[in-house]
Amino acid sequence: MMLILDAVLSPEDAMLLRERLGRAAWGDGRVTAGAAARRVKRNEQARGEEAAALQGFVRRALERHAVFVSAARPRRISPILFSRYAPGMAYGPHTDDAVMGTGEQRLRADLAFTLFLAPSESYEGGALRVETTFGVQEIKLEPGQAVLYPAGSIHEVAPILTGVRWAAVGWVESLVPGAAERELLFQLDQTRAQLAEAGAEESALLRLDQAVSNLMRLWARP
Image (cartoon, rainbow, N blue to C red; front, side):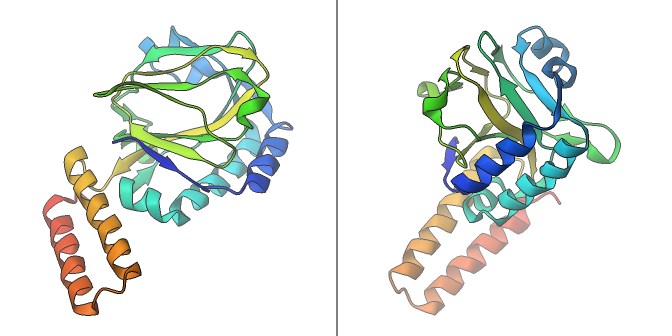
């Protein structure tokens, strides 16, 4: 399942984040790529205290986002990486490592997310391309919007022609490892919200809550 997340950050917060990242130290993005991906990765990544301080800001925004939580069922979220692509840079077709990090930060990468930070009209090129069962999907969103997609998919960032593409990226280890099970739980959550908005009886909503809870007991791997 690939999902667009609206308003993870407000446009104003996305602009503030971008301004603060402009003061951060930057280096070659290949240092955080796996062996295969390193050959096709050409971007810059923020380093140092400024970038580390902003990781928590993005993480808290994701944890407050009801749709992200419902779709991802996060057990762990990786440290956030802030990327910058200038003209001529790109990230060729690759798939993410199944297991990332070391020690306490080690996680299984079930899902990946990209949070866009620059206005789409401010750069040419730079779309995220993700291979799905329906063909290649191209995603280029506005500041504060994000896309959530399977980390095991083949994906790439198209070459930048003009301007600069800014983004925050990361990975999620889900409480529910199975993609089909996560999607079913998400659909049930969305249905419950629609029924509640339509004024459904509390007893019916309670039964639906019970079903979701019991499915979590079957499928969750805390």
